[in-house]
Amino acid sequence: MDRTSPPPKVNPHHFESPAGFPIKPIIQYHFLVFILALTAVLGRVISVEAPSLVFWRVSIAGFAMALWLAATNRSLLVMPRRRLLAVTSLGMIQGAHWVCFFWSVSLANVSVALAAFATISLFTAFTEPLMERRAIRLGELLCGGIVIAGILLIAGNLGAHHRLGLAVGLAGAFLHSIFPVLNRRLVARGTSPRSMVLYQMAGACLIATSALPFIAPHHFQFPARNDWIPLLTLALLCTTIAHAWNLHLLRRLTAYTANLTMNFEPVWGIILGAIVFFEYEQLHSAFYLGTALIIIANFLDPWLKKRRIPPPQSGSPGEIRG
Picture 1 (tube, one colour):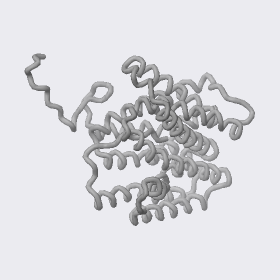
Picture 2 (tube, one colour):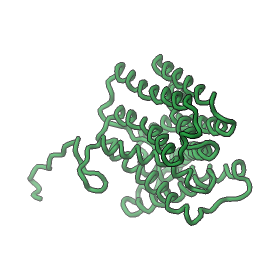
Picture 3 (cartoon, one colour):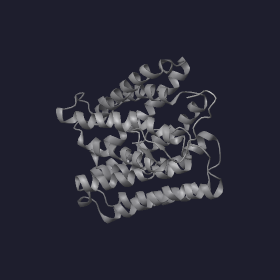
Picture 4 (cartoon, one colour):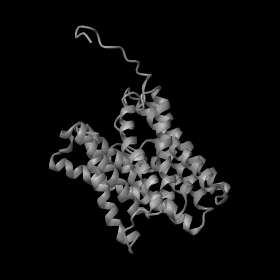
Protein backbone atom coordinates (compact mmCIF):
# COMPACT_ATOMS: atom_id res chain seq x y z
CA MET A 1 0.00 0.00 0.00
CA ASP A 2 1.22 3.51 -0.82
CA ARG A 3 2.38 5.34 2.30
CA THR A 4 0.45 8.44 1.29
CA SER A 5 -2.85 6.61 0.88
CA PRO A 6 -5.35 7.00 3.74
CA PRO A 7 -5.96 4.01 6.01
CA PRO A 8 -9.03 1.92 5.19
CA LYS A 9 -12.20 2.81 7.06
CA VAL A 10 -13.27 0.34 9.73
CA ASN A 11 -16.88 -0.13 10.66
CA PRO A 12 -16.87 -0.46 14.48
CA HIS A 13 -20.09 -2.49 14.35
CA HIS A 14 -18.88 -5.00 11.78
CA PHE A 15 -15.55 -6.78 12.06
CA GLU A 16 -14.08 -10.22 11.72
CA SER A 17 -14.34 -12.93 14.32
CA PRO A 18 -11.22 -14.91 15.38
CA ALA A 19 -12.08 -17.36 12.58
CA GLY A 20 -12.06 -14.55 10.02
CA PHE A 21 -15.83 -14.26 9.45
CA PRO A 22 -17.47 -10.83 9.64
CA ILE A 23 -19.89 -11.01 12.58
CA LYS A 24 -21.27 -8.15 14.66
CA PRO A 25 -19.52 -7.78 18.05
CA ILE A 26 -22.73 -8.25 20.09
CA ILE A 27 -23.45 -11.58 18.34
CA GLN A 28 -19.89 -12.70 19.00
CA TYR A 29 -20.23 -11.72 22.66
CA HIS A 30 -23.39 -13.79 23.04
CA PHE A 31 -21.50 -16.76 21.59
CA LEU A 32 -18.61 -16.09 24.01
CA VAL A 33 -21.05 -16.12 26.96
CA PHE A 34 -22.41 -19.46 25.75
CA ILE A 35 -18.84 -20.82 25.70
CA LEU A 36 -18.30 -19.62 29.28
CA ALA A 37 -21.56 -21.33 30.30
CA LEU A 38 -20.00 -24.64 29.23
CA THR A 39 -17.57 -24.53 32.18
CA ALA A 40 -20.07 -25.97 34.66
CA VAL A 41 -21.11 -28.74 32.26
CA LEU A 42 -17.47 -29.61 31.52
CA GLY A 43 -16.69 -29.53 35.25
CA ARG A 44 -19.33 -32.18 35.89
CA VAL A 45 -18.21 -34.36 32.97
CA ILE A 46 -14.55 -34.39 34.09
CA SER A 47 -14.01 -37.06 36.76
CA VAL A 48 -11.34 -35.32 38.88
CA GLU A 49 -12.39 -33.42 42.02
CA ALA A 50 -12.46 -29.62 42.29
CA PRO A 51 -8.89 -28.78 43.45
CA SER A 52 -7.26 -31.16 40.96
CA LEU A 53 -9.57 -29.91 38.21
CA VAL A 54 -8.64 -26.28 38.87
CA PHE A 55 -4.94 -27.26 39.02
CA TRP A 56 -5.07 -28.89 35.60
CA ARG A 57 -7.25 -26.13 34.12
CA VAL A 58 -4.99 -23.26 35.16
CA SER A 59 -1.75 -25.16 34.49
CA ILE A 60 -2.73 -25.89 30.89
CA ALA A 61 -4.18 -22.38 30.38
CA GLY A 62 -1.09 -20.72 31.88
CA PHE A 63 1.28 -22.84 29.79
CA ALA A 64 -0.69 -22.00 26.64
CA MET A 65 -0.58 -18.27 27.47
CA ALA A 66 3.19 -18.47 28.15
CA LEU A 67 3.75 -20.06 24.74
CA TRP A 68 1.55 -17.44 23.10
CA LEU A 69 3.44 -14.54 24.72
CA ALA A 70 6.82 -16.14 23.94
CA ALA A 71 5.80 -16.29 20.28
CA THR A 72 4.16 -12.86 20.02
CA ASN A 73 5.57 -10.49 22.67
CA ARG A 74 8.25 -11.78 25.01
CA SER A 75 8.43 -8.50 26.94
CA LEU A 76 5.04 -9.33 28.51
CA LEU A 77 6.61 -12.36 30.21
CA VAL A 78 8.46 -9.99 32.57
CA MET A 79 6.76 -8.02 35.35
CA PRO A 80 8.09 -5.87 38.26
CA ARG A 81 8.35 -7.83 41.50
CA ARG A 82 5.73 -5.89 43.51
CA ARG A 83 3.21 -6.00 40.68
CA LEU A 84 3.96 -9.68 40.14
CA LEU A 85 3.09 -10.34 43.78
CA ALA A 86 -0.17 -8.36 43.46
CA VAL A 87 -1.21 -10.17 40.27
CA THR A 88 -0.36 -13.60 41.70
CA SER A 89 -2.32 -12.83 44.87
CA LEU A 90 -5.27 -11.81 42.74
CA GLY A 91 -4.94 -15.13 40.91
CA MET A 92 -5.21 -16.91 44.25
CA ILE A 93 -8.59 -15.24 44.84
CA GLN A 94 -9.71 -16.27 41.37
CA GLY A 95 -8.44 -19.80 41.97
CA ALA A 96 -10.38 -20.03 45.24
CA HIS A 97 -13.50 -18.93 43.35
CA TRP A 98 -12.99 -21.66 40.75
CA VAL A 99 -12.41 -24.32 43.44
CA CYS A 100 -15.68 -23.30 45.13
CA PHE A 101 -17.51 -23.25 41.80
CA PHE A 102 -16.49 -26.74 40.68
CA TRP A 103 -16.86 -28.12 44.21
CA SER A 104 -20.41 -26.74 44.23
CA VAL A 105 -21.10 -28.56 40.95
CA SER A 106 -19.85 -31.85 42.42
CA LEU A 107 -21.76 -31.43 45.71
CA ALA A 108 -25.05 -30.40 44.07
CA ASN A 109 -25.39 -30.03 40.31
CA VAL A 110 -24.86 -27.57 37.46
CA SER A 111 -28.13 -25.70 38.04
CA VAL A 112 -27.58 -25.11 41.77
CA ALA A 113 -23.95 -24.01 41.23
CA LEU A 114 -24.98 -21.52 38.54
CA ALA A 115 -27.87 -20.20 40.63
CA ALA A 116 -25.31 -19.43 43.35
CA PHE A 117 -22.96 -17.99 40.72
CA ALA A 118 -25.67 -15.54 39.62
CA THR A 119 -25.62 -13.90 43.08
CA ILE A 120 -22.31 -12.16 42.32
CA SER A 121 -24.22 -8.90 41.81
CA LEU A 122 -25.59 -9.15 45.38
CA PHE A 123 -22.13 -9.40 46.93
CA THR A 124 -20.71 -6.77 44.56
CA ALA A 125 -23.36 -4.32 45.81
CA PHE A 126 -21.55 -4.40 49.17
CA THR A 127 -17.92 -5.29 48.41
CA GLU A 128 -17.41 -2.70 45.66
CA PRO A 129 -18.62 0.30 47.73
CA LEU A 130 -16.46 -0.81 50.66
CA MET A 131 -13.35 -1.22 48.49
CA GLU A 132 -14.00 1.93 46.43
CA ARG A 133 -15.01 3.91 49.55
CA ARG A 134 -18.34 5.09 48.18
CA ALA A 135 -21.89 4.93 49.48
CA ILE A 136 -24.07 1.89 48.82
CA ARG A 137 -26.69 2.78 46.20
CA LEU A 138 -30.40 2.26 46.75
CA GLY A 139 -30.83 0.44 43.42
CA GLU A 140 -28.12 -2.04 44.36
CA LEU A 141 -29.84 -2.72 47.69
CA LEU A 142 -33.14 -3.27 45.86
CA CYS A 143 -31.54 -5.79 43.51
CA GLY A 144 -29.77 -7.40 46.46
CA GLY A 145 -33.09 -7.87 48.24
CA ILE A 146 -34.55 -9.58 45.16
CA VAL A 147 -31.51 -11.88 45.03
CA ILE A 148 -31.90 -12.80 48.72
CA ALA A 149 -35.55 -13.69 48.10
CA GLY A 150 -34.43 -15.91 45.22
CA ILE A 151 -31.82 -17.65 47.39
CA LEU A 152 -34.41 -18.35 50.11
CA LEU A 153 -36.78 -19.88 47.56
CA ILE A 154 -33.99 -22.07 46.18
CA ALA A 155 -32.59 -23.19 49.55
CA GLY A 156 -36.02 -23.95 51.02
CA ASN A 157 -36.64 -26.79 48.59
CA LEU A 158 -33.20 -28.43 48.40
CA GLY A 159 -31.85 -31.54 50.10
CA ALA A 160 -28.85 -31.47 52.45
CA HIS A 161 -26.22 -32.11 49.75
CA HIS A 162 -27.75 -29.53 47.44
CA ARG A 163 -27.81 -26.96 50.24
CA LEU A 164 -24.14 -27.59 50.96
CA GLY A 165 -23.41 -27.15 47.26
CA LEU A 166 -25.39 -23.89 47.28
CA ALA A 167 -23.43 -22.63 50.31
CA VAL A 168 -20.08 -23.42 48.65
CA GLY A 169 -21.29 -21.75 45.45
CA LEU A 170 -22.28 -18.62 47.41
CA ALA A 171 -18.78 -18.52 48.93
CA GLY A 172 -17.36 -18.66 45.41
CA ALA A 173 -19.68 -15.84 44.29
CA PHE A 174 -18.46 -13.69 47.19
CA LEU A 175 -14.83 -14.27 46.18
CA HIS A 176 -15.62 -13.34 42.59
CA SER A 177 -17.22 -10.07 43.74
CA ILE A 178 -13.81 -8.97 45.07
CA PHE A 179 -11.86 -9.94 41.96
CA PRO A 180 -13.09 -7.36 39.37
CA VAL A 181 -12.44 -4.32 41.61
CA LEU A 182 -8.82 -5.31 42.21
CA ASN A 183 -8.44 -6.38 38.59
CA ARG A 184 -9.48 -2.92 37.34
CA ARG A 185 -6.94 -1.26 39.63
CA LEU A 186 -4.08 -3.30 38.19
CA VAL A 187 -5.16 -2.67 34.59
CA ALA A 188 -5.51 1.07 35.35
CA ARG A 189 -1.86 1.07 36.45
CA GLY A 190 -0.82 -0.15 33.01
CA THR A 191 -0.51 -3.89 33.67
CA SER A 192 -0.96 -5.94 30.50
CA PRO A 193 -4.12 -8.10 30.74
CA ARG A 194 -2.31 -10.93 28.95
CA SER A 195 0.52 -10.86 31.49
CA MET A 196 -2.08 -10.81 34.23
CA VAL A 197 -3.70 -13.97 32.90
CA LEU A 198 -0.34 -15.77 32.87
CA TYR A 199 0.56 -14.96 36.48
CA GLN A 200 -3.00 -15.22 37.77
CA MET A 201 -2.98 -18.79 36.51
CA ALA A 202 0.12 -19.35 38.67
CA GLY A 203 -1.67 -17.96 41.73
CA ALA A 204 -4.76 -20.05 41.00
CA CYS A 205 -2.56 -23.15 40.65
CA LEU A 206 -1.04 -22.42 44.08
CA ILE A 207 -4.42 -22.09 45.80
CA ALA A 208 -5.76 -25.23 44.11
CA THR A 209 -2.76 -27.18 45.40
CA SER A 210 -3.27 -25.75 48.90
CA ALA A 211 -6.95 -26.79 48.87
CA LEU A 212 -6.17 -30.44 48.16
CA PRO A 213 -5.60 -31.55 51.80
CA PHE A 214 -9.00 -30.10 52.82
CA ILE A 215 -11.23 -31.17 49.91
CA ALA A 216 -9.46 -34.23 48.50
CA PRO A 217 -7.13 -35.34 51.31
CA HIS A 218 -6.38 -38.80 49.97
CA HIS A 219 -4.68 -38.12 46.67
CA PHE A 220 -3.96 -35.73 43.84
CA GLN A 221 -5.93 -36.86 40.82
CA PHE A 222 -4.62 -37.31 37.30
CA PRO A 223 -7.17 -36.99 34.50
CA ALA A 224 -8.49 -40.25 33.09
CA ARG A 225 -8.27 -40.97 29.38
CA ASN A 226 -11.86 -39.76 28.83
CA ASP A 227 -11.15 -36.52 30.74
CA TRP A 228 -8.59 -35.02 28.39
CA ILE A 229 -10.89 -33.72 25.65
CA PRO A 230 -13.26 -31.87 28.04
CA LEU A 231 -10.29 -30.73 30.16
CA LEU A 232 -8.43 -29.26 27.17
CA THR A 233 -11.68 -27.64 26.05
CA LEU A 234 -12.09 -26.11 29.51
CA ALA A 235 -8.49 -24.88 29.72
CA LEU A 236 -7.90 -23.68 26.16
CA LEU A 237 -11.33 -22.68 24.84
CA CYS A 238 -13.08 -21.56 28.05
CA THR A 239 -10.03 -19.93 29.67
CA THR A 240 -7.17 -18.86 27.38
CA ILE A 241 -9.08 -18.24 24.13
CA ALA A 242 -12.18 -16.90 25.91
CA HIS A 243 -10.12 -14.33 27.80
CA ALA A 244 -8.35 -13.09 24.68
CA TRP A 245 -11.63 -12.94 22.77
CA ASN A 246 -13.26 -11.09 25.66
CA LEU A 247 -10.59 -8.37 25.59
CA HIS A 248 -10.89 -8.12 21.80
CA LEU A 249 -14.66 -7.60 21.95
CA LEU A 250 -14.57 -5.14 24.86
CA ARG A 251 -12.75 -2.68 22.60
CA ARG A 252 -15.91 -2.47 20.48
CA LEU A 253 -18.69 -2.84 23.06
CA THR A 254 -19.66 -0.63 25.96
CA ALA A 255 -19.13 -2.04 29.44
CA TYR A 256 -22.89 -1.80 30.00
CA THR A 257 -23.66 -3.97 26.95
CA ALA A 258 -20.98 -6.49 27.89
CA ASN A 259 -22.16 -6.82 31.51
CA LEU A 260 -25.80 -7.14 30.46
CA THR A 261 -24.91 -9.86 27.95
CA MET A 262 -22.80 -11.70 30.56
CA ASN A 263 -25.95 -12.16 32.66
CA PHE A 264 -27.03 -14.83 30.18
CA GLU A 265 -24.23 -17.15 31.40
CA PRO A 266 -26.23 -18.76 34.25
CA VAL A 267 -29.29 -18.91 31.99
CA TRP A 268 -27.43 -20.91 29.34
CA GLY A 269 -25.73 -23.05 31.99
CA ILE A 270 -28.97 -24.02 33.72
CA ILE A 271 -30.59 -24.83 30.36
CA LEU A 272 -27.60 -27.01 29.41
CA GLY A 273 -27.69 -28.75 32.80
CA ALA A 274 -31.38 -29.52 32.35
CA ILE A 275 -30.84 -30.88 28.83
CA VAL A 276 -27.59 -32.81 29.28
CA PHE A 277 -28.05 -34.17 32.83
CA PHE A 278 -31.89 -34.10 33.14
CA GLU A 279 -31.55 -31.91 36.24
CA TYR A 280 -35.11 -30.65 35.89
CA GLU A 281 -36.18 -34.01 37.39
CA GLN A 282 -34.24 -33.27 40.61
CA LEU A 283 -35.39 -29.70 41.20
CA HIS A 284 -38.60 -28.23 42.57
CA SER A 285 -40.50 -25.47 40.76
CA ALA A 286 -39.46 -23.07 43.56
CA PHE A 287 -35.86 -23.48 42.37
CA TYR A 288 -36.73 -22.07 38.96
CA LEU A 289 -38.79 -19.26 40.49
CA GLY A 290 -35.88 -18.33 42.77
CA THR A 291 -33.43 -18.50 39.87
CA ALA A 292 -35.74 -16.31 37.78
CA LEU A 293 -35.74 -13.67 40.56
CA ILE A 294 -31.92 -13.72 40.68
CA ILE A 295 -31.66 -13.32 36.91
CA ILE A 296 -34.26 -10.51 36.91
CA ALA A 297 -32.17 -8.70 39.54
CA ASN A 298 -29.10 -9.06 37.31
CA PHE A 299 -30.95 -7.34 34.46
CA LEU A 300 -32.61 -4.74 36.70
CA ASP A 301 -29.30 -3.55 38.19
CA PRO A 302 -27.67 -2.33 34.93
CA TRP A 303 -31.03 -0.88 33.79
CA LEU A 304 -31.22 1.27 36.93
CA LYS A 305 -27.60 2.33 36.49
CA LYS A 306 -28.25 3.28 32.88
CA ARG A 307 -31.14 5.54 33.95
CA ARG A 308 -28.91 7.25 36.53
CA ILE A 309 -25.60 7.56 34.63
CA PRO A 310 -24.93 7.31 30.88
CA PRO A 311 -22.99 4.10 30.10
CA PRO A 312 -19.28 4.53 29.24
CA GLN A 313 -18.28 4.65 25.61
CA SER A 314 -15.76 1.84 25.81
CA GLY A 315 -15.52 -1.33 27.85
CA SER A 316 -12.96 -1.96 30.52
CA PRO A 317 -10.85 -5.13 30.53
CA GLY A 318 -12.92 -7.92 31.95
CA GLU A 319 -12.20 -11.16 33.70
CA ILE A 320 -13.02 -14.77 33.09
CA ARG A 321 -16.07 -15.95 34.93
CA GLY A 322 -16.98 -19.52 35.68
